Every structure is written in structure tokens, then in C-alpha cells.
Length: 180
Image (cartoon, rainbow, N blue to C red; front, side, top):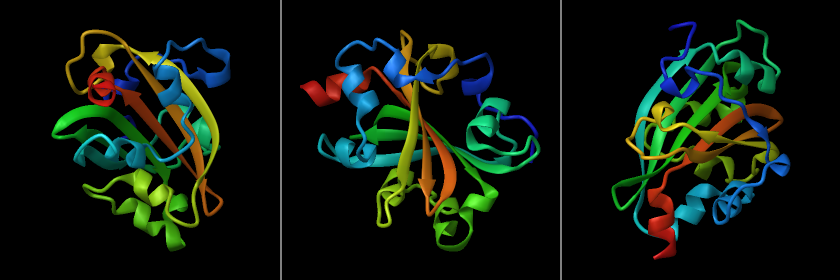
């Protein structure tokens, strides 16, 4: 266990803002504002799969802990994955699941391996998306090479009244795959 995330995703000050306050170019606005399951939406465009990048128990960033209402030393399961269509990365996702949020019927959330967290979040009883923030994410923060900054969203969910945080960064290949 470490007390700091190893992900470059959090290396610099990434400022998430409420989605409603931002002027996001179309068609990214549609992806950021979609309230449904990202997994189900992606499955309409090709063979969907999840490529795990890392999973560890660690302290979330101070910003993540604040959004989750966690004490500063509270540990969480931090999972980073790529969501793929036909083997190509479309979305980088980072989930932060406080350890107390993975108890009882929610314990399955800690054992996703190569499965989609989104599929579980939207299984009955569905998780409730309580807040959405967005940001333009620098290519240097992403685990795959991209030429320009990418739009991302961070959502605070509640599953069985327990909080978890999911950030999704939409990679440029997504538009090519879904508008062709």
C-alpha cells in the first residue's frame, strides 16, 4: 500500500468543475452529460472489453477524499482501466471505492477484475449518480498516447447508500468509432 497514487492522472492540479458551468463542444457534451450506463452505450458500437491497468488499496488524492467525504487517512480501492471497443482504447477510467463502501452486498465492487464497474453500478438496485464534474485532461496524464487534451467527467455515485467516485476520460478514438 502507498499513501500516494502512482497514476500520472493526479500528478498535477486537475481542476474538476460542475458540468453545468462549462461550455463543452459538441459532441463531447453529449458523452459528458449522459446519465445512463457508459458500458451499455459503448456496447452498441462494437466488441466491448475492459483492460485493467492497476488496482491497489491506497489513500485517494485529497480532492477525491473531500468529494467522497472521507477522513484524510481513509483507504480506498483505486482501480484504473481502459475501456476498449474492438481492441482499441476509447475511455480511460479511474474509480475510487472507499473500503467501507465495499461491504455487504457491495463487496462485489472490489472484485471486478476485467469486468466493467459500470455494468455493476447499473444493475438493480441501480447506483445513483449524485454529482458530475468535468475537466479538460492533458495528454500527459493519460496512459495511452493522444495528441491533444481530452474531455473527462468525474461522477459521485451512491450504491446502496455508500459513495464511490468514477472518473472517465473520453479518448479521441471514441468519436471516430461512434460517428462512422
